[in-house]
Length: 285
Image 1 (tube, helix red, strand yellow):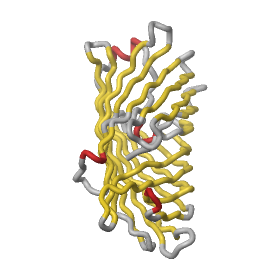
Image 2 (image 1 turned 90 degrees about the vertical axis):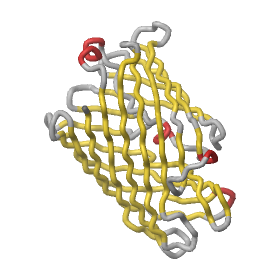
Image 3 (image 1 turned 90 degrees about the horizontal axis):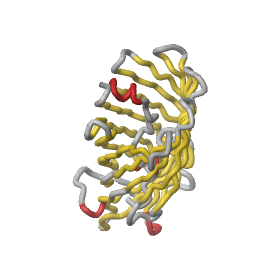
Image 4 (image 1 turned 60 degrees about the vertical axis):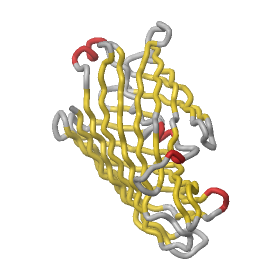
């Protein structure tokens, strides 16, 4: 699991720090976010055969105020990746992940409009649901947030991965809302630009690393072998708010720079660029 990406480890949604009035209106919130992404079979580079992938993930999160003041968010997510493989490289038929997360946002030494967000994400990644201590890690993140205006938020920090190949990575991003319709959410998790057509329908484009992580799997007679899964995506879609609680989105786009690679030169499949379709649902209570 060394080198898990910002996309997975930074599982917070980087919600804007709210005003005191907004915070008083709602002290708790439950969210359920789930999606299915289908990537049709594409040929491998430099070898016969191809790879078809179906990704799915579901996350439940609960936000509340500890001691009636401190905002806390706890979440639990599971990830499942189905792999249909016809190449010469042996690959598991599926990859699995289980991620817990807890984070809080604090005022930063009393500096006006400045906050510190701290989060930890105990996680397991493997090729079945029987996780062991060898694929357990506890990455953490420390992010400074500065809100110079109601329209702009800047953030910078570091994500720390003990015992990973890359033990630390920088975190940079911003959220900019020039008006009620247009929004730039350029944060590590699902960077996107959106435009609200009306109160219910929103057009969006999203881009960046769709996934870039490592799983501990079994290969032949070897145990706990690291399998790296990488791909980049860019796409667009429509989000529709059915009511105050439930919304859904549909997106299509392309995936690039794709590969499944074992550590220590045990085999690699580079996959040609392809297309994806994604269906996502969000419930907010």
